Image (cartoon, rainbow, N blue to C red):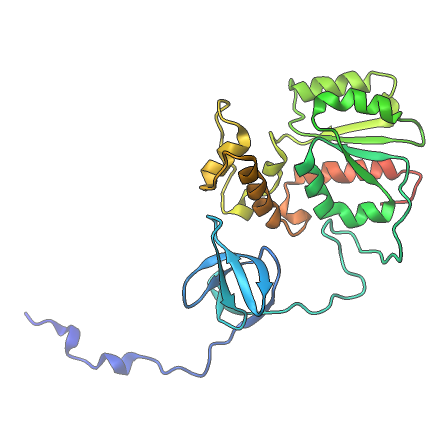
Length: 281
């Protein structure tokens, strides 16, 4: 028996290269996931500095590459280019048409209240342009337990509405009992309380944005944010670790499309509620 693997000229079977690889130009955008062709480093765009694009992998490690290097998106060759100036009618992160304003609008009397700092930061990131156009201020509750006191001080009325966004507003939860009591109270007609089903606002970000197929289940014996950090391989024992983790997660949010519809619909509902009679959203 003879091995016929070498009885022909293998070089003759190779097709000659027909010029350079055709690469599709793709505008550089924060959160865009690309692969550096030469090094095979894959990550999301987190910055651009002195001609170097910064890519963060799912472990949180960042490497920089020249912007004019070759990259892949979903296995297809691309070249990263600086985005052109947007057209006059650009869209905001919430999907609304941006409105040019020469100065900030005076704040309207109605307010939107959210549970904590991370909730407020995410709402600002996606809906901030819309809220400024409408003159809507977002305030912190620092926990659902404070809602009754905050509303009593605020004094809702026909021209002073209060919209409230609560975490984990599901049947039988503490938050649902608080909401039901307020809705039956003296301010109920001028307060709209909505919520999302997630334990924490972090989980309202689509898990694919941080390289997960689904947010992991965290045992009740472990603080949820700490458990998420550990699941992602990030430090999570100190307040600074939690802040850094949230910054990474929020940095992957480019628009409302990166959020679960269960949150998007509720925020839009609140904005509509507090702006009735003050202009359409």
